[in-house]
Each structure stands twice: as C-alpha cells, then as structure tokens.
Image 1 (tube, rainbow, N blue to C red):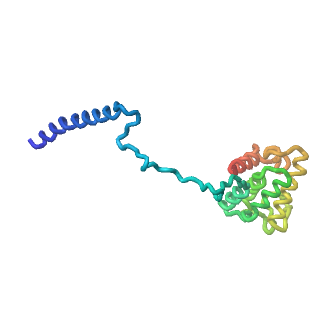
Image 2 (image 1 turned 180 degrees about the vertical axis):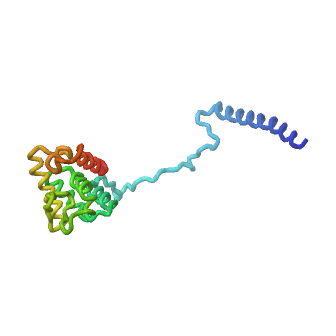
Image 3 (image 1 turned 45 degrees about the horizontal axis):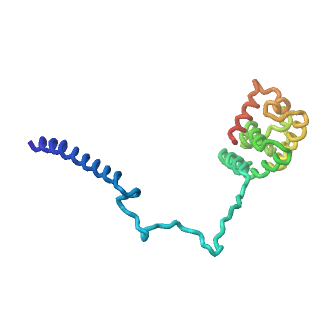
Length: 194
C-alpha cells in the first residue's frame, strides 16, 4: 500500500509543481515593466570591466613576431628517426634556400637512400647515394659538406637540365629505379614533412 500511495502522490504533485512553475514564468513575462527581472539591478551593484589606465602608462604592443618553422619541422622529423643529421637541420634549410630548392627535398632523398643516414658507406658521410655505384663511393669529410654538395648539385646541374621534381630528378639520380619507386618514395617522404 505504501508504494501505491507514493506513485499516486507523484502523479498529483508533479503536475501541480509544473503548473505553478508555468504560472510563475508567465507572471514574470507579462509584468508591466519592460525590463523586469527576478533580481533587479540597482546602480550600486553595477559591475565594470577592467579599464586601462588613463595616464598613458599602459600601452598595447601590436607587433607580430614571425619565425621560420621549417627548421623545427625538419629537426623533429630527423629526431623522430634518430638520424645523425638532426643537428644539421639548419644547414639543410640554409642549403635549400641558397640553391632555391624545396626544403624537404634533401631530407627526403636522405630518407630514401640511407634511412636518414643510419645506413651509409663507412666513413663517407654520404646519406644521399650521391656518386655511389658499383666499385665507387663519393665520400664527404662531414655531414655538413654532404648537405651542401648535394644541394649545389641539385640547385645547379639538375635545375639547369629542368629536373626539379622527384620524378624528374630520378632520371639522372637513379635512372634504373623500377616503376619509379625512388621518385614515389621521395615524394611520400616530402609529403610527410608538411
């Protein structure tokens, strides 16, 4: 019997509360004052936002500082793969800029040719497969020298021949790449660097 009385009281009290709430809302909506509120605002309770000082001591600096994110992008990419080229991210950008190359091209070639310099001929600092063929390996004295020599070659010899995209560069760099795999991979690595 106790449960039945709770259910009955629920169905009687709930509509009564809803009805009273509706009446209260209508009362507020149709009051004669145009800006009526449950909590009237008096002039003493007005809140103000923080205003700047009027003595001119506060100034707003509207200058914008820009920086080149390319070095950070290259550096993070090289670090992600534990590449020995990581300390040379700045050289990769500078060399690309000097020879007007896409900044992603040289690291992408290094990724394709040597897994970002992790697998290179001994004491060669040659991460790019540059001048490496049967019985011959071009050696550099440092990673830095390799970066600049490859950039110079791509920026002069290859550009003068009209070879600027990975597919075009492949024609001289590694012309026997099956089905253009070299160019596809280099382009894929370049896309990863966006």
